[in-house]
Image 1 (cartoon, one colour):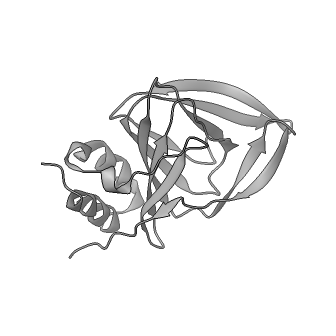
Image 2: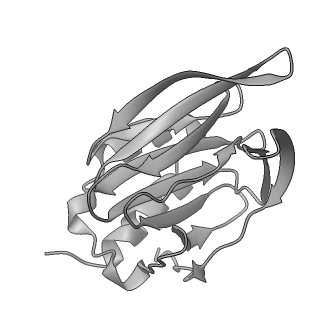
Length: 175
């Protein structure tokens, strides 16, 4: 049975573990047991960032993507980022900076129940909903990210972006 409480189990596991264990936790967790509907919000204008949990060590954000919506090219302010695709299909495109120019270095298709990892040592990336319908992804950032460097493709310049949530439903972890 799907339950909102099961997300609290994930948060408790992350809270009690070191960052080195996050990959294994996220790869082995039963996300099918979680009812994400109460945390979803949708917009035709842009993907939405819906915070489920945040403390000084990490944040858990549910992103809801309409067809064709994508992030800007961005970094992660020195923090680690895991993305678990719950529904749909995503394309992740990777970039590096060479001689102060941004260069595409590869891409990958992300399918449901796949986990990806990104940090500034790897480079920059952007995510796009490549599915014919809606996609939903769960993002874990260790530590929380309040701003990041992004690349404006029109001006071809790097800019600092302040990150916000579209919804914030802080879950309380039960002991």
